[in-house]
Structures are given as C-alpha cells and as structure tokens.
Length: 392
Image 1 (cartoon, one colour):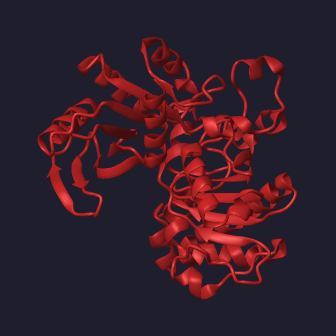
Image 2 (cartoon, rainbow, N blue to C red):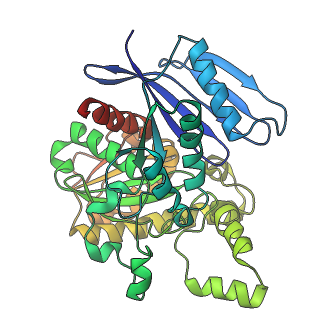
Image 3 (tube, rainbow, N blue to C red):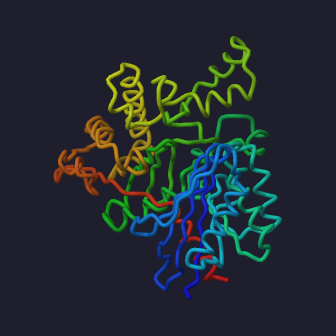
C-alpha cells in the first residue's frame, strides 16, 4: 500500500483535511473534506478527488469540540480505506522571525510556537491544538508545521519594519505578512502558465473572507498588505483592514471599550459585514440593490485598486496580476472592476475570458497579463511535508 500524508488546516470553528498518497511524482490528492461549526451544530463532509461524497454526518448543537472532531476524523479515515498516515502536515499561521521554513514539530518546537500565540490570538492556538492532540494520541507520529508567515521572510527590511521604538521591534512588533502558503502555491502555478511574467514583477490578490495582496519579484515576496496581524491591509469579510490607530484610542476614550471588546469589533463585526450591516458574503452583496451593500462592494474594490498601485510602486512596475481565493476565483464583477481601474498600469481586460473564469483574462494587447488561478494551500503543505520526509 502507498504511504499517505494527512494535511490539517484547523481554525477556531472548523477543521479542514486532505489526504494525499506519497507517489513518486509528488503528493497525489485523495479524500478531502471538513468539519464545520465546531462547538455549535457540527457538520462533517468528505469527498474523493472527483468530488463524490464519501461521508457525511451532523452532530447536535454543542456536541463536538476540536479534540473530539480530530478523533472522529482519524477513526473515520482508518475505517474508510484503512488510511493510517505516516505523517501529518499542519497549517500554522505564525512562525515569527525564527521559522522561515517548514519544520518537524517536537515538544521544544511546539513550546516555541505556543509563545507566538499573542501575535495571532485567534489563529495560533487553534492551529496548534491538533498537533498537541495527535502527539498525545500517537507520540511517534511525524508532524510538520508549515507557516503562513514564512514566505514573506524574503522581504527587504524596510518592508518588515514599523516606525516604533527599537525595544518593541526586538519583542516582535513588526510586519510579518500572511497567506504565504497560498502565495507560494500560486507563484508556482503562474510559472507554469506564464514563465516570463512569473520571472518578473507580479501582484497576487488573495481575495476571500480573509483578503490580502502580495508583490513578488521572480516568485519571491517583496511586499504585502497584511502586517503585524491579519487585521491589516484590505477590508475583509468581518475585519476592517488598515485602520488609523487613533480610532482605537477614540474607542477606548470616547466609548469606554476594553481590549476584548475592540478585538471582537475588529475581528468579527467590521469589514464587509460592518459596512453593509447585513452580511460578509460577497455573493450576497453583489446580488443586492441595498445602498449599504453597494457601499461595501465599492469600498472593497477601491481599496484593492489602491493597494495594487502601492504594490506596483514597490516593484517598480507590473508584469502580471493574479486573482485567487474565493472572491478572486469566482467574482467576475470584482475582477472586472479592479482591472478597469488598473488601466493606468497597462491592464486591458478580456471581458469574455473574464466571464468564463480564465485562466487568462487579459486582452492580447494588455501590457500586463492577468490570470485567475485556483489556490491550493493544502497541496502546498503536502509538498513541503513530503520534501521533509524524503530528506530524512
């Protein structure tokens, strides 16, 4: 039997998984799925590589925690095809300044990663919980952490710096950038579609419920819109993006809000949801005639265009623009509006190709090639994990 590799992407309320066969030509995708709405009314779905549903289950409200979900998943995989992975690859949001590459996780490494939790309070602990649970269940199992921040460690120092006292910088207050696994995957895919553009100056727009953009030169991160935390940069589903710090002082002084109240506002009640007053779902907003919905969409498009100009300036020009993630891959109207606003950069949209979803959506005369590329963070993790396994 071919060895298999399990990839886990754990969030605060969900557990996404993908199972890969470790074939000679690289990881081959097999079963994938997710357990959603943890701690509420959990739902499990698993599909094969062709999309056929292999399993589904629902739990009553409040019946399933993260550890229980992981135990269920491991048992389900063993009972469906006898999968006993030789290793597990994990998405870990924050690697700080010391983790610039994927690593095998031992007790000492886990302790170092846990110390980074204050830098990503809503993500890091959720990412590490399955690692702890699997280590307790099977201490000999190889576990590999792959970091969303690692891809951006190639950025020049001024891009990573914040204009704060050096003592704070030494404590880790700096720009990190996120969505690195997505950017790394898309950069490789762009190279297969347009080698010339990939070797030059590109901007990748990872537009989803969490949204950011990354300037790359020859596939290496030069600048990105997210900074110290996942709150920075573009407006997102429920996060505001770039915000004048004076707003936070005003919320404390004028509204008497404490740190946890502000945290809830910034992570859960802002962004598209906050502006529209109705939803964080771009599909619903695009279908709505409500003025507040239109304002939310207009703000999102404007900020993408503004950040695109900033990133093109960091690169000294632009050869390629790539859209990826949920909105980037599926919202043709958003792509069209961003491209029309970027005509000054040399972007010329092919309306028909954009309506069809690409992959190339720029016109033949466009000085900048424009692409739609489906991201696959789990496959990127699988590739990293397979490489580490084979290097041992």
